[in-house]
Image 1 (cartoon, helix red, strand yellow):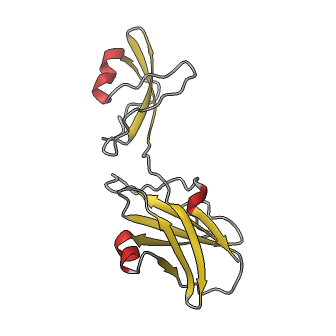
Image 2 (cartoon, one colour):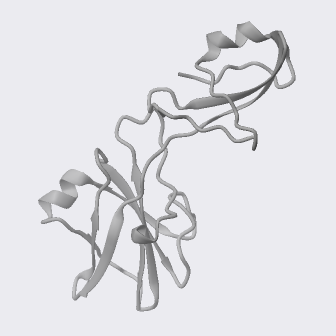
Image 3 (spheres, one colour):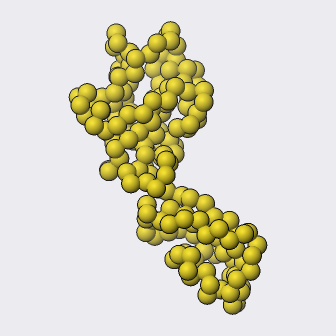
Length: 168
C-alpha cells in the first residue's frame, strides 16, 4: 500500500477511485471508521463523490498500535528499573525520559530516547534499566510501542495513562 499520488482537487469518475483501495463510507457525522484496519495497508485517502464524479482529497498513513500498559518504576542504586506489559505482537519500544515534564512523543528532542527490544527486556528478567547519568529530579517516562511488521517507523500514541509514570 502507498499513497495514491493524485493531486488534491483533481476530478475523476467516481468508479475510477476503486483502483486506489477499498471504500469506507463516511457516516452522517462526517466520520469514517475502518472496520478491519490492516497494517499492510496503512494509507487512507479522502474522496468527495457526487453522482458519477469524484474529487481527490488528501491522503495520510494511519497505523493502529496499542500503548504498553502497567508501566511501573523502581529506583535502585544502578538507576531506575522500568517494567510494563507489552502489547500483543510488539517487539520494540522507545523509552522516553524527560526531567520535570512529560515526554511529548517518541521523537521528543527534549527527552532522552532509548530503544528497547522485547528480547533485551525478556533477557534482563522482564525489565529495562535506565542508567541515569544526570543528577536527581522528577523524571517522567513514557514508553511508545512500535507495531511488529509496520511498513515504516511508527509508534503508539502514548495516550494511555498506563504507558506513563514519574519518579522523584
